[in-house]
Amino acid sequence: TKSIREALEEVIPAKQAQLKRLKAEHSQAVLGDVKVEHVIGGMRGLKSMLWEASVLDPNEGIRFHGLTIADCQEVLTPAPGGKEIIAESMFWLLLTGKVPTEAETRSLSQELARRGELPDYIVKLIDSLPPTLHPMTQLGMGVAAMNHDSTFAAAYERGIKKSEYWTHTLEDCMNLLARLPALAARIYRNVYNPGKPISVIDHNLDLVGNYSNMLGFGSNHDLTEYLRLYIAIHGDHEGGNASAHTSHLVGSTLSDPYLSYSAALFALAGPLHGLANQEVLRWQQNMQKEIGSEITHENIKEYLWKTLNSGQVVPGYGHGVLRSPDPRFIALQKFCDTKPELLKDPTIQLVRKTYDVAPDVLKEHGKTKNPYPNVDAASGCVLYHYGLTQFKYYTVIFGVSRALGALTQLVWARALGLPIERPKSLSMDTIEKLVKST
Ligand code: CMX
Image 1 (cartoon, rainbow, N blue to C red):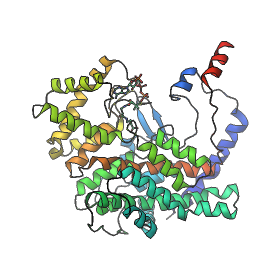
Image 2: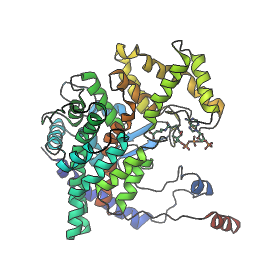
Image 3: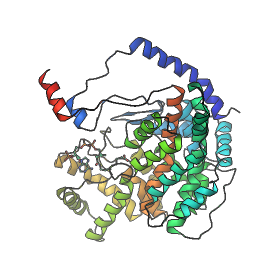
Image 4: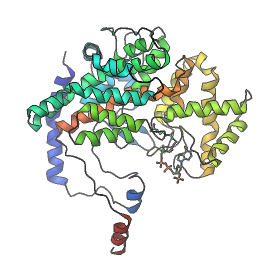
C-alpha cells in the first residue's frame, strides 16, 4: 500500500510542469478586469489566487477535484460500520487528486493515529487557559504553539533547498492534522467537563471516530457519523474564503504550517465566517424564546424582519460566491431525512421552517446577493440534538475540518514554489487620480 507521501510524489512532477507551461505560455493572458468595486468591495469575484483542490461554482457549489459531495459519498471509503465520508479519504483526495483505495485510507488512519498525541507542553498550555476564554481562541493558541516542533521551521533554519520545502511542510501538516482532534477535545473537556477523563487514541479508528471518542460521544454512532460528514464537507471551499486565504497568505511568507493554520483559525472565528454556526443557534434560541411554542411560518417571518430591521444579518444565509442553496446545507439536511428522530426535533424543524420562508424575506429585503442558506444554517442543530449543546464550541469542529483543505494547499504552494503574496494597495486619492486619467 502506498503512503500519502508516495501518492503525492507521483503527482507533483506533472503539476510542476503544468505551472511551468502556464508561466511560459500564458503569463500575460487576461482573466478579468480589476475594477474599483473590487478594490473597495473585499475583492469579491476577483480571480487572483491559485488553489488546486476545489473549485466553487456559484450555482452548483463545491467540487473537490471535480467531484460533488454526492460523488464523494459514493466513491470515498467510509469508516468500518459507517456510511459517511471520513476525513482521511477526503484529505487523500484533496491532496493527491486521486480517490484512495480502502487500504490506503486505512493506512492513513493508522498513520494519523500514531501521530495524534499532544506534546506535554501543549497539554500544559491548554490546561492553563481560563475556561471562559473562547474555545476558538484556545484552538488557535494551541495550534500556533505547536510550531515549537515544526520540522519545516527547523529545516529552514538549518538551510534547505526550495525543492525540499514541501516534504517538511507535509510532515508538519500530517502532525498538525493528526493532533487537532486531541487538542480540540481537550479544550472541550476543560471548558465543559472539567476533570473528566479523555479517551486514549484508538489506533484502529479513523481520525473523527477518535475525535468523537475523545469528546465523550464515541458510543453515539449517529453523532460520530454526523461528525464525519460534517468534517469531510467543511474541509475545503476553494481558496478565497477568509480562513483558507489567510493560511495561504501567511504560509506564503514561509511561516510554518502551525503558524499559518493558527492564523486561518482566527479568521474562521469571525461571525461573518465560521462563527456563523454558533450565531445560528444563538439566533434561533432567541427566536424560540420570543415566539414561544407556537412556531409558525408567519412568526418566523416576523422574527426575520425584526432581525433585518434592526440592522443585523440573518446568520446562516448569504454567501460571497454561492447564488443557490449550499449543497453542504443540502447534504446535512439529507442526513436528517434518513433519521425520523431528527425530523421530530424542534431545533431541526425550526431550521427547515426558516428555510421555507427566509429566502423570500431576504429577496424582499433586497440587499443580499444570495438569499439562500449556507452550510452554517444547518450544521449546529444536529449537534444540538445529539447532546453537543455548547454552541460556542461549534466553530472548533469547523476548525478541525478546514485543516483538510488549508493544509493541502500549503503543501502544494511549497511543492509548486509559489511566491510570497503581495498585492498592490491603493489610496482613495490614487484611485481618483487613476480613474480621472482613464
Ligand atoms: N442577512 C442580512 N443581510 C445580508 C445577509 C444576511 N444573511 N447577507 C448579506 N447581507 C447584506 C450584506 O450585509 C450587505 O449589506 P450592506 O450593503 O449594507 O453592506 C449586502 O447584503 C450585500 O452583501 P452580499 O454581497 O450579498 O454578501 P457578501 O459577499 O458581502 O457577504 C456573507 C457574504 C456570508 C458575509 C454575508 O452573506 C453574511 O453576512 N451572511 C450572514 C453570516 C453568515 O452566515 N456567514 C457564514 C458564511 C459561510 C461561512 O463562511 O461559513
